[in-house]
Length: 478
Image 1: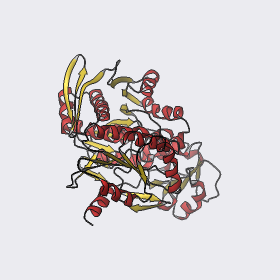
Image 2: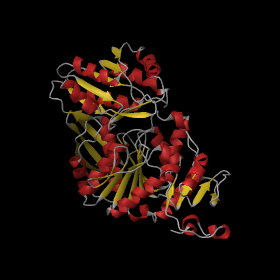
Image 3: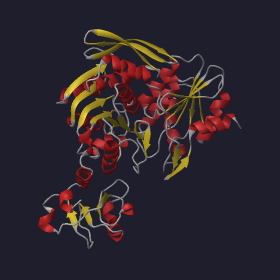
Image 4: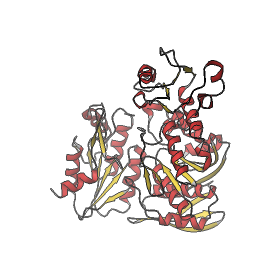
């Protein structure tokens, strides 16, 4: 692709046209003929690596600030917006070649994307998924270089979209994080349907206030043709009031276009009735908990906005299986049950404990920690929730990152001490899991909260292999 095609005709007013072989924002990944884009991050600044990018063969460098290099420099006001637009042009605007569904909110995003996938596949269409667990087309897992856990950076996102086009995807459903919306990772994308799940405390280390967090989430509905919103959530009501797109309101309460009721929760899942346009439909989903009903009605709303018939939607939900790391029952051949769940927010932790209490015949044992270098105000809140709702809590490490794990645990203890709930502190997560397994009795349910689908633990700035499923089997077979 020519530089003028990638950067615009104004390039020809200042520079000779040249061939561009690709785009990079990490100087280590620059190949000869690439455009290197200097991006200011939170830990480092790409402008510092412009010379390295030049040495590696960059033909053009895009920057916000003055840099000293011998190759042409294209100065812009916002390099994040620029790389997003360049990526769209370089990959020929792939997201315009399929129907795009985005799911945002604090909790439930991953599960909802997989429920929508099941419905779309039941309708006979080929679908791709982009999100926390993995990126897939049909059953094919796509390998990416992205370091972002939920929504890839704009360059990797457009690369993924191009793969989706190559894989004949007719629809793509993706998780859209508040970071992605605030940092322009989805700039240049237009969504056929945007979905909002809920808003509870998370990411205040980045957004600082819940108001900022909500405004970031609401941006999805500025770039969506249609919306689906959990109207039981106050943030959902705000989005409905301030959105210009056509919104379908879903929930359990009044004022909804799709209303769930007559909810029956079992260990094997949940049954409920849907009221839509004055007609009642029975629904079954093989994931227990009231929060699963909210996830289901959000997925149903998205499918309806895509024009899929209700009968197919209900069949698609019945076909859906559990998602790795989301109320995942680990086969242990024991008289107690072990569940792994990604719950890492106050609302997420309360949801999983309450869901388990609805079917547990024995004690509920909750093992959890909180991530380091992240919002520390939620730690005592999560401690209070675990102490109040669990029969026994085990406080341990999550991903401490560069923080002292003991300090993180002390923050959690500040909340749990006020509940009078029985708990123990075991800093090492492997030892903590062993303790949970050793103390469990018949009919107890152990919840391992926080890690979910992750197969690693971040200590310092290093990732170490840590799959809770493996840890469980090793302990039971020791």
